[in-house]
Length: 101
Image: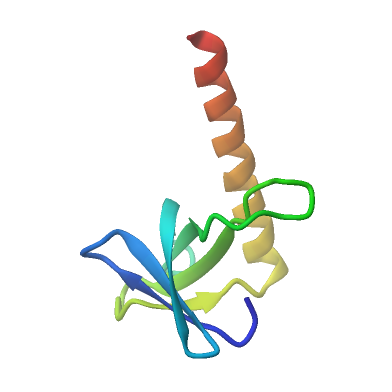
């Protein structure tokens, strides 16, 4: 969401998105750390849906060395590729779990 300020509420396991002065609580779906850049990536959703009915997933990052909870946008192609790879792995693992039931 452009023009928004996002931060991590560790006590509630939520991400708070602020846009136009409105706070929206989002559920955290996944997190992962990248030692190469000292960042933690957080995937979260506000449960809104895309035009085709899929749930919107947002991904932001924060520096886990400073750990102030302010989330920053994922901007580089390298980060985008890494996040897409993690999402594909999550998708594969969840499909395996469904099939193995």
